[in-house]
Image 1 (cartoon, rainbow, N blue to C red):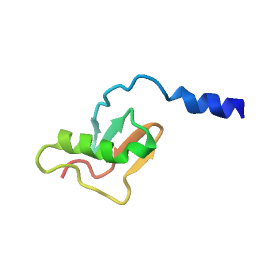
Image 2: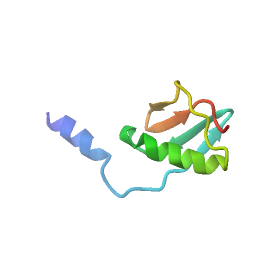
Image 3: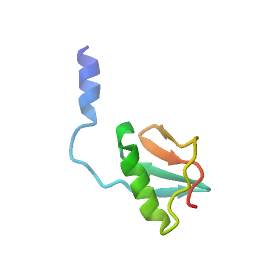
Length: 73
């Protein structure tokens, strides 16, 4: 139980501004929590410009990073 509480608090701390990175076609937004999906999409939209990010049913959260598999529209 103590270990679970310790691991849960490990993510708390000073928030850093996430950086959107592009890999082949995928757009990655690291540094956000799972529940911050709307914020990740907003950051990805800003990175992609006027057309925004192309949403997909396969967009996901993995290893601390939001992944938008279709990339920019």
